[in-house]
Amino acid sequence: MASSRKRGFHKWTIDFTGYRKSDRQLLIHQNTELKPPLGFNENLVSVQDHSSKDSDQKLIDKRSWEIALGPLKQIPMNFFIMWMAGNTISIFPIMMVGMMFFKPIQALISIQTTFNVIEGTKTILQKFVYLIGNVVCLGLAVYKCQVMGLLPTHSSDWLAFVEPQQRMEWSGGGMVL
Image (cartoon, rainbow, N blue to C red):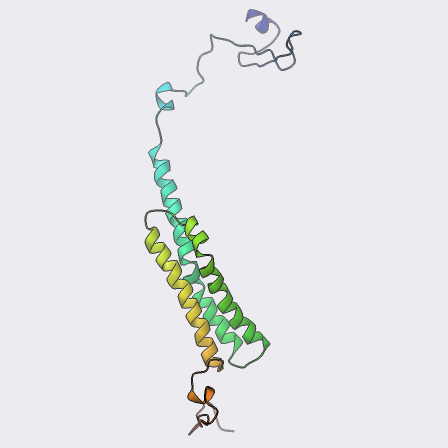
């Protein structure tokens, strides 16, 4: 070890340039007289940190609740889209209604893979909230179809000999010009 200090090496030096000619291994200068670095305590090495497990569990619960509440967070946006699309039968409202049907149905079909991601202490409640959120989104899509007149809700829609209902009076707001 004294020879390594004479050549200008420090205590913690590893020599990657010197090879043994016989087996070509790296020469590592080891010093057995080294003291542990400042702040090192052998008693603290074996202690496990339980607070990190608690924080990890909290993060898992938080992420699971975000997944579970995702469909319920889409409901206000779906209301806004329904209002913006209007009640006429044209390409834009039909596409919006189609997407309002397609997304919850796709989520319900892939519900098992979503439930594999959800874990934590309240998994049953989180799965139930996720299911209810998707069913409510489907209900909004059905309501929009009914408002647009796409659902057969009157007997005249099913029977050819029944006349459609006639409006008895019309009402509206605004000013008469």
